[in-house]
Image 1: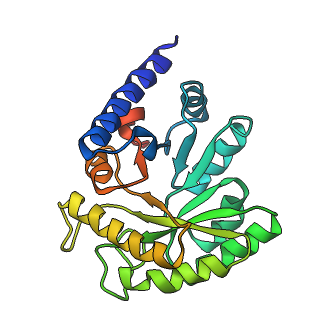
Image 2 (image 1 turned 180 degrees about the vertical axis):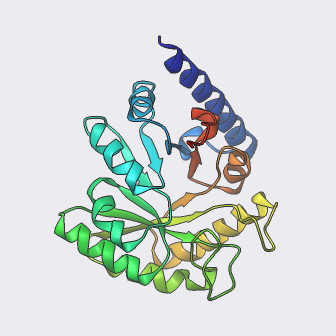
Length: 239
């Protein structure tokens, strides 16, 4: 086993133990929570190692990094999640490899994704990104729609050809009433998910929690956690 494979295997095992312990503490089954490894800034070689180690869900937040990586790993049995803020001029590229877009936060993006999904004869799972640091009609500091805008956006996704409304996603906010209160933020997201599922029963994905706060997300009821540095390590910035 190479040094890097050994390192990633050890890190994955530690994260797995954390998820198992969080599920046990919450009275949940381990299979209720899907681990998504966020591979941003790391090379395709790492993605290949992760796949060998059993990882099946990976995420990226920049198309310029994700597109060549997904192409290089097209032979692997992976589900790709796009989790970053998405500009409409990148939609054509992202729609070519992403299985899920977790950062849907405006009607214009829904229209663009639908057009490309139909053109490429693909179905894209869409999660509405919820900004818990936003006012009722604002967008969040790191993207996302305010809670008051979920219903209208969900209806747009549900009606759009080529798209499937999959659920909700959030990033723990740095400002506002939920700053520093990850558990409360994730519990609020779960309440919003319950509301959403009354109108859209199949939209049952709840993506929340990262390396530092995955336990709080599992305790709140998240179905998917997005973990990067706890698996891949901290990579020095280039330049």
